[in-house]
Image (cartoon, rainbow, N blue to C red; front, side, top):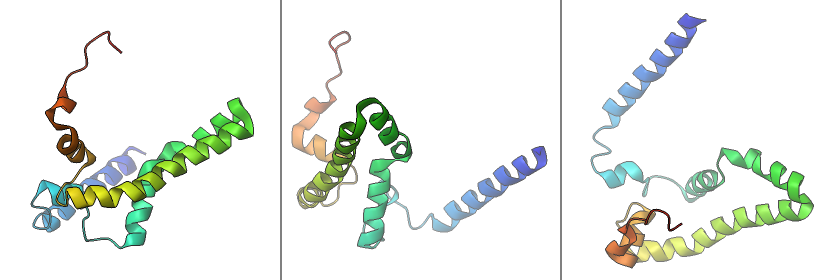
Length: 126
């Protein structure tokens, strides 16, 4: 069993190193590394964002909500998850218009609210 574990880990490590070496010219800036701007179709990009929003916990969360709160909790849980994606669909283009070269939401928040967003939390206040 140990051989197959080491073999699999080694295979993935070598594959990763080869991939990074072959694509190092493509990802020269932080923005090109963090985003897939202009490289994906709309359907694939939407599916990627949707999967990121939902995450793996979507498999267990609704069942737990339904166990404790019944059908109402299940419907509320599903609505809240869908609503975040819908809101992002409307706000995303507006954010992109204001900061076309931004890579993360943090950059937009910094642009919108300035350095005050970096004020540290006062211990015991929350």
